[in-house]
Length: 161
Image 1 (cartoon, helix red, strand yellow):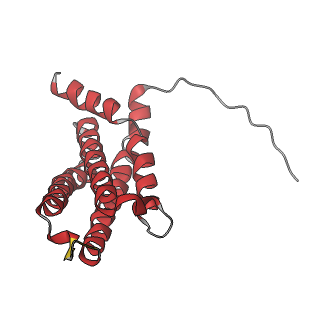
Image 2: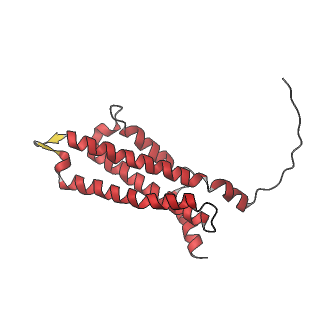
Image 3: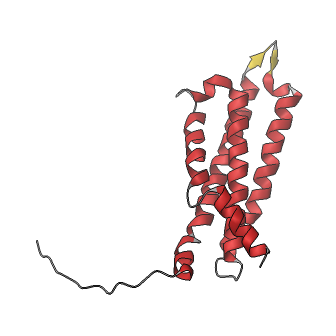
């Protein structure tokens, strides 16, 4: 084994350099959240078409339709923000764009996970359904690369300058 000693120059990391490294990872995390958020209602729709209660598919009940529609709307609103953040990574409002995308994707995916769990019921926690894996993934990704409060603060800061 060959070892070499290299003397490195230590320089303080500046905020622009830190942001340049951090910001490209944020839309990637937002895209993962969107993907997980898309999978949950897809699985939920399949489940509510199969599950019967009181002689009817539970998907025929209005409350379930409305909840799944709300999820669809949230996911559809998050997608263009993620696309825009990815395109504008070199733009002057990069911090605002990537943070807005992360907040929207996180909120949409979290809504999808809550609704998915409600329509599945307790069986959604079991290993029999992939929903439990998607719930864990969403919970982890919502706080990855900055909490929702951190990103809301970045958006607010960029708008009040």
